[in-house]
Length: 535
Image 1 (cartoon, rainbow, N blue to C red):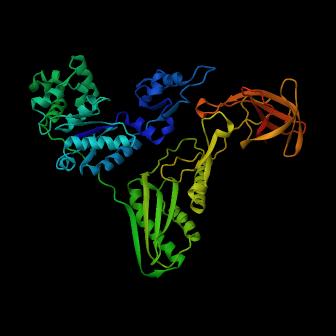
Image 2: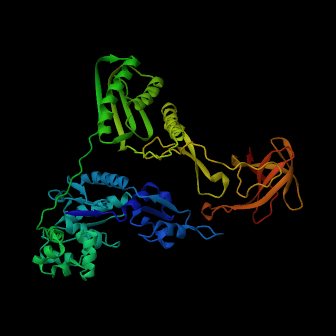
Image 3: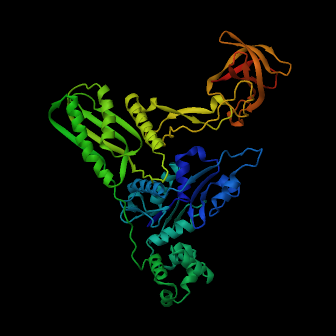
């Protein structure tokens, strides 16, 4: 039996999906007996004093940099625990491991972090248990995972050894091959396991700790016949499972059936109305089966087979999992309308990809229905645009953690492709208006319109204090009436070339407002640049 343990799986999964968070303080919080508490914390967060089990309010105070300072590890990220998503991601790893064994399952528990792989009848295909385990370890590490493996005669022994004995410098632990758990060669390893390796209930573990029993070997020294009456039947059952005296089975994961539907015509068809009708029939047969499982899809591929030509593929995506027939039919119809067909169609095939649980929303007492409907309409618009123009043509701005304004934002796809994130709600939020003419600007005011790259301007006159007084831009001369600044902005050391700028917010006699700066290097310069325009 082989056990693959993923240490701190929720945090490991998050860092695999969002690698930009690897060197930042990250905390995953969950609901505990005393309210929200820390379940997992990354190393930068632990270096700041955050500990597992700590109240979330205390962790937030530790993650907040002192006034007047900046966090060296970047802004902290606090996320809610997602057990359903963690389990689904671990199930995907288990299905991938079926290339090594036909019998793979998850370790029992509300939040599993380990996979169980049966080696019976398949270890010899890769030269034995140890070569198979090492190959699996290398493949998982190549995929960015950090795992610890153990091979033992029983499920309980493999889980305990992987969880408590496989160390960072020794990720693989294998007991003597072909030796039962009751053999002294294997019993020596098992007796050193802590009591927690028996997977007992928390109250029973606390009782054993109060009695001074810390290892399995110390528990074995107690009279075995009196254990059920003194400590309950569970402890004897767990000992028997550890020694192989009680059966314990792996619950295999059923390979999900492909969400695929097919239709063949007796005669080639060119009528678009007929094709749309068949698509409706196929979707009506495919999606209700998924909805009964409370699952939806985020991508749908439609293949049109034309004799003598390549297969025409229509691919549409969704921002969130959906199972509505009309929704997917409308997206496909938009692509079908603009897709020229090289010949008549003899066969149609649709396939639902990226299955995921349908999102559920709790109705609140004071729910803003208008905002909710507006968000849904906004998502529908983006999905229709993605279907019409292509997914990479529909972009949204994102804030990047950079100091220089031209690097502080980028455009990413809205998330119609597999693995995208939900779109931000379009509901308006209160925004502080710019002050009236003559009033001082707030210290962090930024123009709404930024140049993609700073534009060089000709500075005709500079005030004695070094502030801009008169300049030309786009052939027009502008006289500065009010000026605020300077504000020093420097590029981060990781950008390579050193950059240090002094920014000024200026208002001209014509009422226009600009954001100007001058580069401050080792040698003084007279070059000025325009970064943005205030609307």
